[in-house]
Image (cartoon, rainbow, N blue to C red; front, side, top):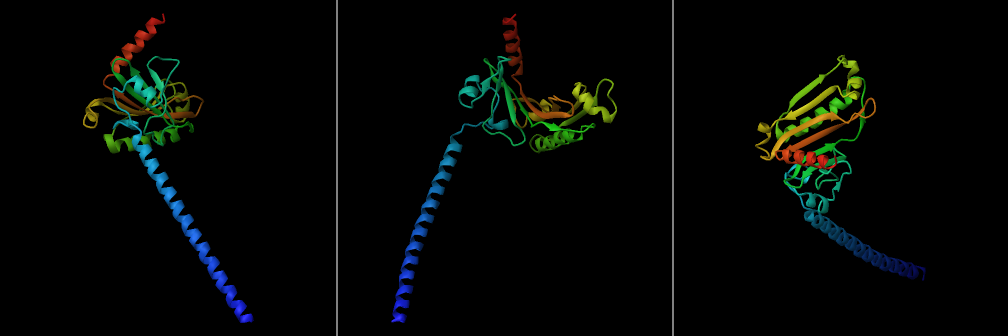
Length: 229
């Protein structure tokens, strides 16, 4: 009798486990299906985001209206031609983006800033960050020309941070139009440089993409300023 009961117990246990396994398989199948749908939705959403083939998914001559309504840039209170926002293809090297745009010829300049970082008296850390970004840009645009000098009285290396605070230090890489034309015929100037020094021994690195229609933006900005006088 005990053997029969024992056999019955194992049969019931086997049936219950089989039912649980069926439920687990069904749950796993449902989870996999949901994940596949979510992945497909993400791909579709990504493909729907409009992008250009220029820096950060932008390009020369994009209209102010498109920058605001499609990409979500917001006008600056300090300048009629300045917009701030996040481009369609942001880089993990930068956290702040701004563009200069004219009503006549659209986008003419892109500026991106790294997070703030601290550096020593010689500026080693921020110089190294600038070098690293310049090397990354060189993969696409070839090697830029390096400029490094200090103006004024802070000529000793250990006074570089003070020179930077007083806007007397230059540490930059520059690409001229002739080197850029093969990559983007609309791009007239590219640079990566130490900037926005702020507090002593604290600064950012910025990259500037300037297009050949920059003159229109400069003209419109001056006209806007003149209207306020």
